[in-house]
Amino acid sequence: MMRRCMFPTPEVEALLVHAMFPDAARIARNLEAYRTDPGRQFFLWETGGRVVCAVGLRVQARQAEVLHIGTDPLERRKGFARALLSAVASALDLTTLSAETDGDAAGFYRRSGFYVRETAPRGDQRRFACEWRAAG
Image (cartoon, rainbow, N blue to C red):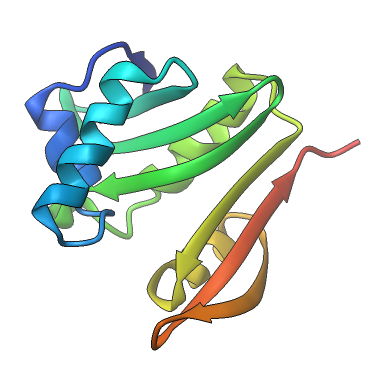
């Protein structure tokens, strides 16, 4: 079940950190931005009374950008992140949902109904632009 979370709890932060570049200062800046930037929102997927997935978004009108999405490592590949993105798009009545990602997550976005295209690399890492558009 999806729900919006108003403030990042340690449990939510732990899930989002799975999707952040492993640099302590950068992680701290990102988490602080979720606390202070009104354009950033985050949502949770709960099952069995436990939070198993969280997504952080930048939302503007009916468009959103996935900034971070993290799933409990023991709960991966069960469809929770895909269900969360679908529920968020529906709840916010989004027309567009986008993300920039690396090669590790490009397949996830493709399986979730996003159009995925390779973009310019960042350093030595391949990068991908992912976009989902509402039908109609």
